Image: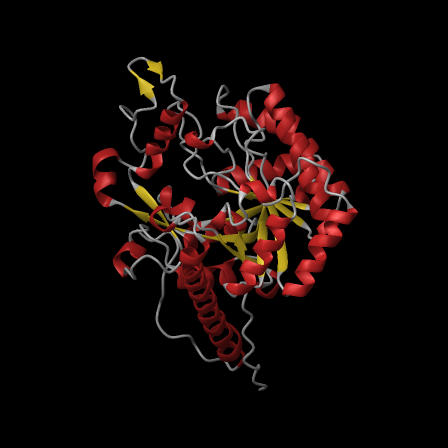
Length: 413
């Protein structure tokens, strides 16, 4: 018998630059659009994060969604009003080299199935510019949403996906890129009573969408950027979700992670259930939508009435909440990923995403220690999971020694 060596494989840490939207003041970054990226790379080094997920978005002057109607305003750290050419890329790459901070991927989170054809065309054209920037910056992935046409029911959205989203994936394939879909259901994206406004919200839809992709030769371009906060929001637990993918033969679909939690408010669930607040939210005035755009943000009460986002490490350790799927069990999350998914942990990114409202301080000096603490927590919990997995599934297994106990089980009720 030969003992297998203890060789834990931690994942690669990153942070989404929307965590600090205006690190570079708007009057400076609009005049010098790549300054925002340079200053974020320096900031990432200061908070001890080895990589960034570079946030792209339509410039505030070009967006179809006013900032006052957003729950979480997006960040155009990557400004693409002007072409992102070789010279711009070379400048960013020099800063990456000097800071020692890398790039996990690019993120552009918008509705690719928007009902209005002109708005949709604008978003798709912007996504192609994001694809081109990703190639110039040497990354192999872009993260975003699929979205939903709220004027259509779900089956009709599958048809629309085939018509208008598959061409985007073909463009990604031509550039050697993978499109990683975040699964947020986006319940407050519009003022209707529709709750699932991103059709790629759970494993069942992922599989249906991937089968469409396979028919068109772009199955390898469609992957999932899993975020456990959205699973908690929908009453799911990570281990069962990963087990289902493995049972169905689709555990290859998840290729990256957003590290963001969700803390369920049991009082809110008691009042409204997991469907969220369905009436008297404030986005409607009587029988008509409010003509005040700021009121549209109240549509997010479909979500926030029963849950609050967690920045990893900021929620109390709560074993009962873990068992009730009302908060993320981070250690089991990282173990389950290694045990059930078809990933190489050492080549997989964990991207910290900051949307904890009370700590969304847009002041560098105040936010820096908060983000540094969350990154340290994420690093430590993943290293603990890597050690447990290597010890139990490699070292002990190589010597025929059983792992003790039962542990958390999928599908258990």
